Image (cartoon, rainbow over the protein chains, first blue to last red):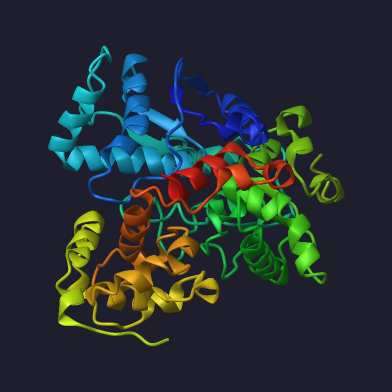
Length: 292
Length: 135
């Protein structure tokens, strides 16, 4: 099976561990991942004002690239890219006038966009196309006794119609981790915002949220936390440094992309997991569980 | 805080502009407060989300545009998910930010960020921040 893949900016640098583990995991189950030849930034956030069409140019141009590559679907793994591409797509599908304006704006493109590309997330692909049961059969190293809390954040689940699980109580990541053999840990902060881009100029807010979210996961027994968003990952992982400065009683906990334990379970070599990019080192706990 | 209400403010084009940019009907709000109860950012806000809607209904432009709350909101959309009247509160707050940004009143001064602050920040965070906080 061959799928079209849109990486997004951060997967090529800070979140290379997300990309490498994703590609290795998919290759190991026989999925050929074909990155778009050309792509640009998705815009990172969907524009929420009614008249702001200019900010839909970037995501829609990426969907044109998908058509040029002769695909009718495109997969993303970054929660922000997923949300922005999918919302822009839904916007132009429900508003033909704005689609006309955007196509006219990009009149040098060889292909015009007609709302005919489907945007999907890796988690949807694994659940619906592969099937968690089938995936479980391909596990070579079950994540036995590893207690994993799944953090969904905002953009995988909201708004309704864009998110692919229950807005208040999503379970898709927990279901996946359980199928890989892990003990899935539920915790009340799993959809609470990490503070997102406030990390740039108001890192103090992030320290508060990281403390709340991770302390809650730890109190429920979690040994690691998994995420699907490079911005959540930065705030919950790298910002633990600021968190412990503000809250000396805060205890560190490794934060991984969900594709890292997925890749371990599917037998990917350690070099594809790129733990050097994880701020809080997950290797001690993974070694203790016999997983690396 | 002392706030003066007037018929003039309520009828000001500001109210129409907020409704137009956000695509929301402000008068649908009946002040149940669910948006503020669920908002993870209220502890840092000077005006709470339900109050933002009330202020917008009343045309309290100066109070809203001078508030810190509109810059604390990170559009996590929890308020939208929980509003029993289907109002997208995050869109209303975006409209308020946009009214300032469209007049070049940036919230983030990129040039004032120190090298230390910029260090290690991934592109996803910088681009988001510039999209939300600059014109």
